[in-house]
Length: 106
Image 1 (cartoon, one colour):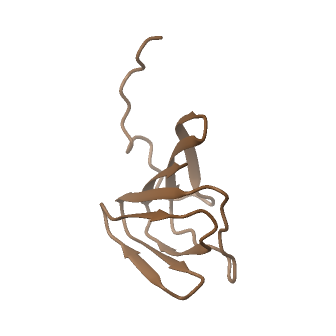
Image 2 (cartoon, helix red, strand yellow):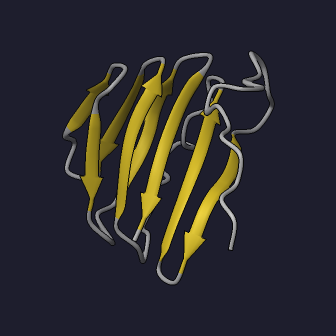
Image 3 (cartoon, helix red, strand yellow):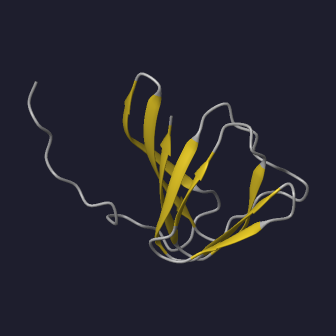
């Protein structure tokens, strides 16, 4: 097996997109690493993610706000991260344009 060439996480970041852009950077077994680019998207009113996987997420660029079903909010600046246990219901209340996330699902 040979090593792949280096890439840059900030390459081809759009400033406007109707939908979030999700790129799987690597995956193996029960681990998946994604780059998520948000351009102002938020969760629909009343919607909460309820995922079967744990999610470690770090905001690499921009600003964002996540909230949990119990009302707790987390304001993210560049470099902030959180580990979200499986089935902890959460939603995205705000993303800047752009906001670049690195998410590790495990």
